[in-house]
Length: 185
Image (cartoon, rainbow, N blue to C red; front, side, top):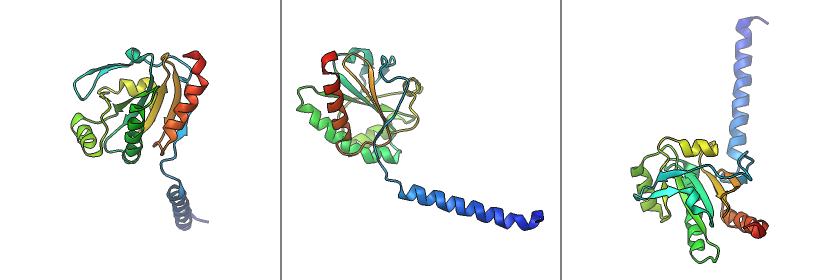
């Protein structure tokens, strides 16, 4: 077959592959929460010091004694927007818990104005931590947002969740972790 006659076949094959890829993407379930491995699991959490959009300071080392969730977020991220109502529900749950978990949003590649406007519109009164130079995201190895990390009361990383949280997933996993590490607190 000469070169000129093979071009339509190659283009056709590429088109079929593209359509197959789009079908796979369309059929994938959005927002499936999934735990993921990381070299940080079971290790002390990275040093995190920053400021919050509300004007305060944040030092992860000062959170020892509490379970902590860091949720990496961007106001233009569609999965971040989809999971936000579940985070609002989770935060409300924690206000009546005997062993409450502290929730923090870490802003990933975004600015104060749009993030504050998002929270004003969609709720959420927990601290929002700036990551202006991306150092926090790099320290945790955040691949893409949303991504959530759970740190135990001793300051060790216990869970990495990649992708949007689904309803009840975070509560269930934290309850499992609290049971698993109850003796080691």
